[in-house]
Image (cartoon, rainbow, N blue to C red; front, top):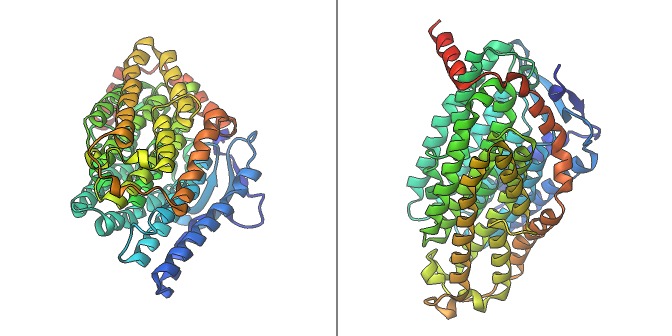
Length: 513
């Protein structure tokens, strides 16, 4: 068995992974017994805070020198078809699990006064989303993974369609249709892997040695399914609509966690199950990543809607993540993983700030919100910090991740690295434009300026502290992920002789035969 597939059972006396998945789900069900809106808010906040604290032992007991999956829960589900309830975490899934549980209470806090109708139902959707997203990152049975992947659609659709903006139904339907279209290809890949492995267990699939033709089709099917979630250009058009129309909590979940499902899938499944195809098709992923970085940056620079600006910046920033994955070296992988976490903290914080402005002015336009910041010192502090992190200023978390992505790109090719540099400059341009307009611009109504309150401080401060901490000390995350990333790289070199032309030829011949 490959070292990546080694299963280490939990050193804790309770099933911690099941607990952090199902505690929010049970909490959502118990909300049916609570009639008072204020009580439902407090109950949801308590449940998600408890979930976060229950996830902390994963860090304390995680063994960074052990390769494979830890805290494993394995129970027979449908043995005749190779189905099992199999959960586990390793160095690339644990940071995303912690990011998900960490941001759970933040989504409730930012919805406290933003959501004014059907409060109980909204809190239930937030709880369900948290539990389901956690399940995506810990599921090691492919059917279980697919179940969580698809189940996420329901609460997210409701969050956008019920509590979103004027075009919420259009945005919600577009989000669901894009995701379902990608999920069809993901399901085809899972079925194909089951045909070859005779089991839906991901650790069992890691032992497969697929032919070039199988690898090509598996890689392409997985890629389409995951590319919609990232989202990679040109499959990105659902994202701005969903972000703009979603409530603040929905935008935070989308940007901070949901997009990471796609890049996590690329790193977890594409590179390990189809190494030859990963190497052969990597140049194409690089091209689309560079396009996303530049295209997303240019569109952000042209926006006057604050949420649209941040949404298109996500397209650009996630381009850095896919670039780091596609260069297939250690610096790129490290940068991609760090950017997943850092983007979740930074962009989530920016959406929180955009929501706070909207609560005051009922507009997302820069012109309406211009100049308000100079009357809101607390708000300006966080806007400055998150803006600097978004443009990868040294001393902030995003700098480390983006620097490693660029290092990986330059290590692969000087020309590739040169193409990416303008993307970093564009980030500085659009983030400074937004910050300077909101802070010192003219046109806003000073009467609408009201500095952030204690609840808003409570939602903004924890991510801000991590932005600074990981900017100066990213070592804990790197130490956690390095053994897994090194093991993934070791699966690739033996396949590097397979060029793209040979790979496609073999795949077509295999399909015709």
